[in-house]
Image (cartoon, rainbow, N blue to C red; front, side, top):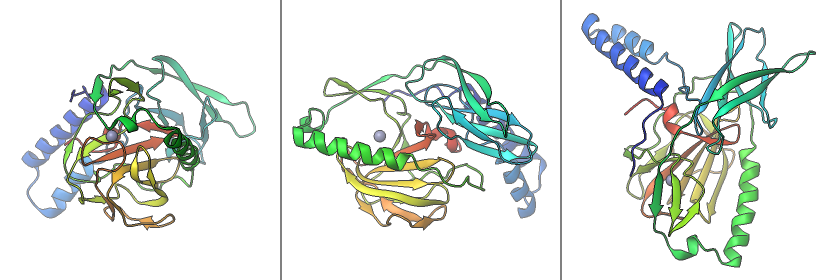
Amino acid sequence: MAIQNPPFSLQASTRRNALIGTLGALLLPAAPAFAAKAKAAASSEVWPHAAAVPGGVARLSLGAAAARPVARTEDDLPLLVVGDPIEWTALVGIPLAAQPGGARIVRRAEGGADQPIAYAIAAKQYSEQRLKVAPGKVDLSPEDQARYERERDHQAKVMATFTAVPAHDLQMRVPVPGRRSSSFGLRRVFNGQSRNPHGGMDIAAPTGTPVRAPLPGRVIDTGDYFFNGGTVWLDHGGGLLTLYCHLSAIDVKVGDALRTGDRFCAVGATGRVTGPHLHWGVMLNRTMVDPALFIAAA
Ligand code: ZN
């Protein structure tokens, strides 16, 4: 599987973390209070990391304001706005299909004209991944096609969930231990036919491995879907959703609240897969973005 170069900002922050870690070890005595302080300093960097590329997240400053401003995409989808009255930041999920070049969001002004905020999307090359799966999972029968379309319409409603903005920071805990592939964004060819690019991170783990919540969240969908197999969606607020696919077991129901680290399902090999693994997706403004931007480097 091809290894992607992480975006520059990710490399830079990884270096910064390594530096903080080294200095912390050199300068601080090994007292627990000091160790906790050093850890807090290292984790004060921003989450998610900025990467204004297709499949990444742009962090756009909205400036100072007494109340949290409202910002929307050009397609009028609500954006997650984080920060405080000193500086608010819009987190913008950029679709994998976005063209590099100029883009913009809109800040809704109270009683005034909407204010466009321009930014630039840099190019990112994703490689190609060729996979072999059961023929019926690529050339769908009329019944399976109808089932897929029903499920797609249902999922579109789930993905439109937008609830109160999370109060906690957005660094995510990795939901299962295991080898994390850098397969986000790969252009996929199933049995010789081009399909949608890969919208998540695959983590290799045996069937039955517990999957744990990466942040506090609420279960907004569970099901057994044609391509995704056993599936759970979690809502973390402000349009930040996470997706878990190919599950062998689901231990929660819609409406359940989870804390970080709660076990809620188990790895499996259901749906369109080549073997057991967790497919982990992260969504902002109804756009799948690279989960690697939300987790500490391995
Ligand atoms: Zn996957």
